[in-house]
Image (cartoon, rainbow, N blue to C red; front, side):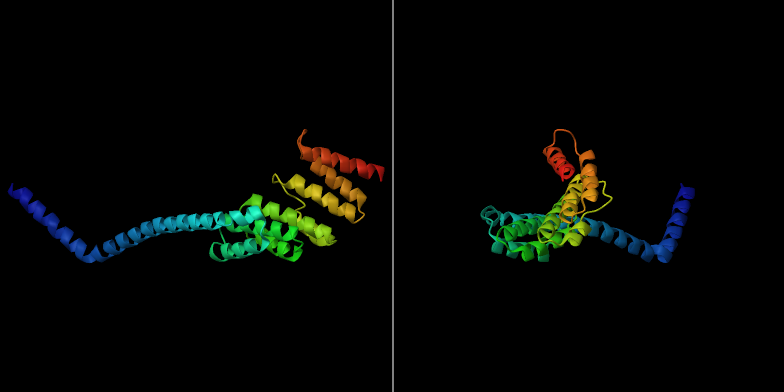
Length: 211
C-alpha cells in the first residue's frame, strides 16, 4: 500500500507542476472552444429568426399582392431589401413590386426592382425570372443590345431554353433573321415534346421560313 501511496503522491505532484505551467493555456483553449460552439449556434439562431421575420414581413404584403397595389409593394419591397437583403423574400417582394409597377405603366420602377433581383437574388429561379422579365421590357422599349446582354449565351440551367427563345425574339426585332432562327432552334432542342413552349417556338420558326 505504501508503494501505491507514494506513486499517487508523485503523480499528483507532477500533475500540479504541469498544471502550473499549462493551466492557463488549457483554460484559454476551452474558452475558445466554448465560444466557437456558442457562436455557431448563436448565428444559426439569428439566421432562423431573421428568416422568420422576413417571412412574416412578406406575408403582410399578401393583400397588396392580391390587389396589385404598386405603391404599397414598392414600399414593402424596399423595407425587405433594407432589413433582410439576403432573404429570398426580399427578391419575391421585388418581383411582385415590379409586376405591379409594370402593369401600371411605370416601367422605370419595374426595371429598378428587377435589376436588384438580377444582381442580388441568391435563388436561381428568382434571378432567372427577373432576368427574363427585364429583358422583355427592354425588348419592348427597343433596347435590343441591353436585352441581349441579360441573356446568357452559354447557359446549362433549366432556363436556357427560355433565354434562347427570348434571344430569338430580340434578334427578330433587330432584323437578324438567320441568327434568330439559330436561337429558336437551340431553344427547340432543349424543350421536351408536348410542352406548350415547343409549339410556340415551332410557330416562330415557321414564320421565319415564310418571311
